[in-house]
Length: 207
Image (cartoon, rainbow, N blue to C red; front, side, top):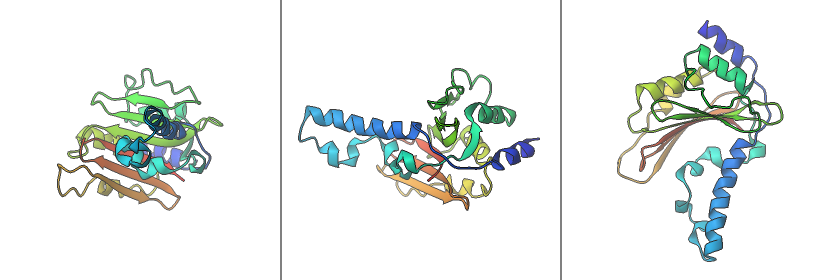
């Protein structure tokens, strides 16, 4: 039954775009602008060190208009598939607001990780998927299970485990390690490890 659900989802792939990713970009720009209003010589305008590290990834560098839908399913439909395939539980879905097609749905997990579904406000389809978790230096079994489960909704997901392994020479540095895998249909799996904080991101998007 799980395999059939995955095939059902991936057979519907199409393209479009959504507001939630742009909101994150706007948040970054607004925070810099507000700081600059306090100090006309604020170095943050030209210094990436002032930005939250999550905004320094390739995913957040892409404009809203250039992102396309990754799954032509509404957040309600996709969340049903997540439940059927035991990727999330009904408890995880509490207060996730998957019926709101104008705003992202946030799904919280017991391990303090969070899954974000970003919809296209025009049709409610899934535009991008973000999974943020607490420890990329030592990936937990729970986080790995969720990431692998998400990847199985797409063909050519076999290399996901490879990009979850980060080549970190010194764990006490301030670098961010980014691994990507672009599928033949243009969908990108982006795996990010912020070495300084230990926090990780797994983003699924298409430009």
